[in-house]
Amino acid sequence: MNCQLRWGGSLTLLKDRGMTEASRYATVKTTLKKGLVMNSQVKPGKLLINNEWCEAASGKRFDVINPATETKLTDCAEGDQVDIDRAVSAARKAFETGPWKKMAARERGRILNRVALLLDKHRQEIAELETLNNGKPIAETLHVDLTLAIETFEYYAGLADKIHGETIPVNGPFLNYTLREPAGVVGQIIPWNFPLLMAAWKLGPALATGCTVVLKPAEQTPLSALYLGNILMEAGLPAGVVNIVTGFGPTAGAALARHKDVDKIAFTGSTEIGKLVMKMASETNLKRVSLELGGKAPNIVFADSDLDAAVNGAMRGIFFNQGEVCCAGSRLFIEQSVHDEFLSKLKASTEKMIVGNPLDPKTQMGAQVSKEQFNKILGYIEQGKKEGASVVTGGAPAHPKGYFVKPTVLEGVTNQMTVAREEIFGPVVCAISFRDTTDLVRQANDTVYGLSAGIWTRDIGKAHRFARDIKAGTVWINCYNQFDAASPFGGFKESGFGRELGEHALELYTQVKSVWVALN
Ligand code: NAI
Ligand code: MG
Image (cartoon, rainbow, N blue to C red; front, side, top):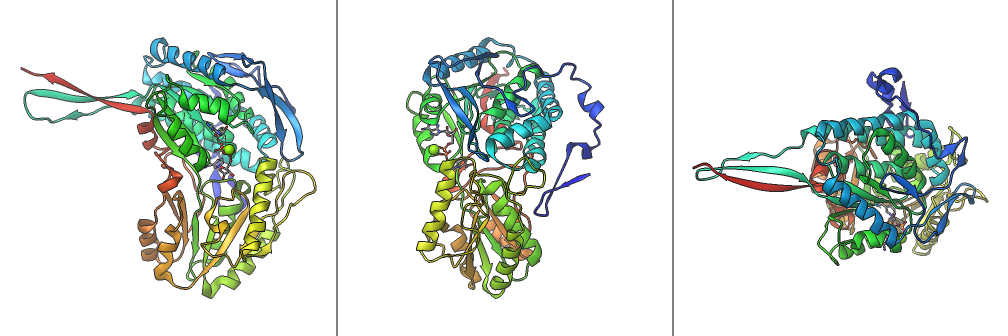
């Protein structure tokens, strides 16, 4: 069975890959006892330090909200610098003296495989938890977030025993070889838009290489990471290898970015905080840094494209995950000769979208993650109107309760307007008409960001020239928002640096040592 994503794409479920449930679970003997959700009763969250659940040293807690109902779901321990210190020392001890680094790489791979199996086993429960906390539709959490998170752990499970150095033919009577060693204690700060998936992207390669980790989930969405904490322990991860400290950015996050005993920091979030993290990373020591930040991707529709497919792709590009996607196709360039036809098709399809209860399997767009994001998006729509854009459809809240925004299309946008320059991070696409194709690449590149880009055309020469000339880490040709654990992802320019996923991510979490041996 193929799970059809609603804007035409498809993601293959694990079952399609020839695995029966029995074979997948063969190695899993026990079941989870401490799950966070039981029939949607969400339990309070604690910090995970050294494989023990504990309160923050301050005893403080913070509320976790369901953005679809604006009500409190539960609360979590509010970690700060003291708890980060405890977590970093646990990670340091586990790195220097624990079994993790010394373990056979294949055994580390087996543990990561068990994480994937356990995520799959609890797929429904975790998906519900994620949807309750983030507001995204259950159809997506089940078949996108969970599937991709599972595949990420499977992919790095397979890579764990394939990380090795090289021998180098140097001058003279010497043997020269390299060792590829784990980076050490790693701090990972993740955002709220794909809470579990971002944890998987970060943890998969870090654990495959033998690093130990302190993970700081976003304060809006800490719950799936805590559930994952249980799974990591059940899968057999030794104490201190992954520590999870929930809490706020300026306290817990900043303490991690500054910490003297952290060797590497990986951050996903806003460009504003990414720049700050880079600064903090050099305050007490000199951490290696990787940053995956904002975007303002051009999605370009040529008159010679399959227009219906392009309409679908434009929607997938901006309405997937309520537009809370760093690589969202938010600047929609449309060739003038098909502009009106394209927009009328886009308007008609957009107005058919089901926006509502995220737990309903039929729902196509859920709630924005927080009141802050909801207000920010509506503010940008007003700003767009003030600067001369007009609303083709949407432009307002979708329901009186909950942080729902109608899928919105703005037309008459120019590349200089605020809505075309700043990341809205919501379901708002800016349609920009173009006639002069010679100037198009310059316009598409005229942004501080460079995370991704899309192009819709039947002319393969044009498509590949664009792929070469655009300054972006990912280019989609006649498709949009495709992801795979094996394919690298990351930014050019102010969208950050470092590549996550694929073999490239191993570079983030390893360092190379050159060893010389005299042969005479
Ligand atoms: P943010 O960048 O403030 O938060 C992301 C993570 O960084 C969270 O875990 C947060 O606790 C942490 N953080 C915040 N301040 C910190 C600090 N001073 N030191 C260390 N860590 C810190 O993003 P926010 O405020 O939630 O969203 C604002 C905008 O950022 C969004 O509207 C969107 O434009 C962009 N964003 C981009 C994301 C992406 O995937 N590239 C993800 C989330 C937000
Ligand atoms: Mg912030």
